[in-house]
Length: 392
Image (tube, rainbow, N blue to C red; front, side, top):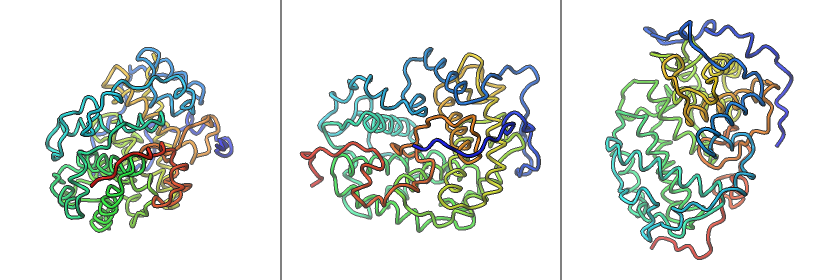
């Protein structure tokens, strides 16, 4: 991978005014500055020190593939990794260990939401390690029976809450992609075609996202759409309204440089917004000047969310203990943004291969069509097992 991200921009991070100027924010914002006595890791100034912070955190919490893979170490991690025990304990029905009670339910069913996330982690682990489970994900079969079944599944989600629905919607498409590309189920491909057709049809062209329930809650719509956008980018499917999506996201940035209105930062909102902006910038070239300005302020603010003992915080100034998800989010934000901003201090060997919906920072720009067999090599999926049975 070419790690040359452009000329040095010394002072981009250290010289930025933290609060930012002319931030476009919604009326009535309650954004807060960091408390005067807040302690943050001021040592992070380049790629090496950022990686050291992640390694310090991983040493306390144990080996963490999602975090360490960001630094280009995935091949080494794959060599050291042991075959997951759950892979050999999969049920013939397709369940993966820990989610053997999974049935298709709506967004309001929190155990289901959590099990779908667990399924995503299991699939991602298979892809990282180039392994395939012994059995197909048969729980998807009701969705692949006919196009109407797929549409009914989408439309019966509770779209008043687009953030959790976005997760479930994405995880459904991600599992279908795995069932098709890795496990050889052609009907899963047909269900994905229907999935894309429905989403293409139901965009709100005014905001560039989905607001199927007409809530008008743009922050939740943005945070929800980030997940479906991950499928669009990963499979190289065109977005119809990229300018509008960029404008909506930019308008949600707070004076802090981050995207939560009621605290100093929220890791999910931050990565949701930056994921959308960096992909729209790289793939579609829209609102370039405004996106670069927004990313400069976002990078400066995210640097203040790292803990002196290593790792990053969910909400700086509120939470006191770092966690792996916040660490992954904030490192990703800096990595994606640095490539656009040309911050050579952060020109490390980032690993941006598209193994799951949150990896392709260039918006699938270098990937062939998702209907092309060459997509296997480009996206780094495991090869399907020749004996994998297709759905009847």
